[in-house]
Amino acid sequence: MVLSLAGASCAADSVGLLSELVPWPMMVSAVPMTEVRLTPAPQEGITGLPVIPSLVFGLLALGDGPDAGVTVALSTQPTPRLWIDQDNDEDLSDETEQLPSTQITRDTYGWYVDVEVEYRAGATVVQVPHRTFLLVDKQLGSSALTFLYGGFCHRSGLLDLGGTLVPIALGTLRNDARYDDPASLLVAVDTNGDGEIDILPGSTDVYGPGGEFQVGTTLYAVKSVSPDGRRVVVDEKGTAAPRPVIAAGERAPDFEVTTVAGRTVKLSDLRGRPVVLLLAWWPESDGCVDCGSSRQEPARLPLLREVGGSYGDRVAVVVVATNASPLATGLLPLEPGSILAAQDSSVGELYRRVEGLFVLDRDGFIAAMDVPWSTVSCDVPVGSLDVLSDAEVEDCLYKLLSE
Figure 1 (cartoon, helix red, strand yellow):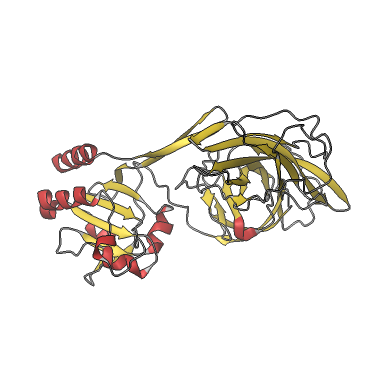
Figure 2 (cartoon, helix red, strand yellow):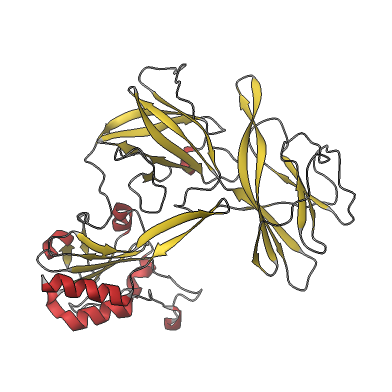
């Protein structure tokens, strides 16, 4: 991690140097994948080819340098294995055969591989490491196969904000290892000043592509990023109230929605009784918009109906569909009174998640909630959502009503 920020081009700009490659993606989005065209001969000048029958070759388009890409040689018999030009010197003789890192299904295999990617740096060309994920899917009963690749890393370093070094990380939704497209750039920054970056879904520190980000009460926007993601320039855009923290013990952010029955409901107006709030991404259809059988609902709605029926007016139940499609409106449960149902994508943006269940106390503080978690196993992140069980929701409500 580089601390010297000499060479900033403008005093009004803040510069971050991100020298660390973190070998897994930000956990707020899926890894995009692109299909690789396979050919019987290499697609660039390459030497040191393995003497293996039935090899096919692919080219990973990475970086913005003059190099055509990174060559991969693939054999699928009897088990998929590959040779990849990791040092990007157009020579496979110094590369070792790689068996799959993971087997996802019987016929789907994956590899996590670090490669050197070429980038233009002014008049020179530099090589910068990048981790990519490769996926081979053999179609059952056929010799056909699909070969995909995508980025599996992000950059991390420090941002100089008026002499204060703030942790920052950049991830790209592009799979060509390019970071200089703001519309595809994920930003994670130490928003609350605790010295760490949380990259889990719903984190206070994570910001989506194309928008502003916040440190303390100051708003910033990305002005430029080098293609390799190692240098970011930001400028100040204004001020804002501290970003709400979505966590147990914190007050739930307030919002106002119009229910499917036409009633205007403000979350803060429900204080004085516990609230069960469900954010849900509704399935729209299975291809037949007019078929009633295609309409589905989140699995947790039966629990909320039971809560509404058991506790009556002592507990408020609010369901918000966070997807923007008007098709979701027809899938929401009709009130009468036990469940307040609405469709509003801005609530998902406020809570920084499209799904999740929250139990609020009488004063509007989060007493319990679904919590995302992660760990790293064999250099690969593993995580999920720790979902509140029906029993945990019932137990929490019992305690809140007993207070």
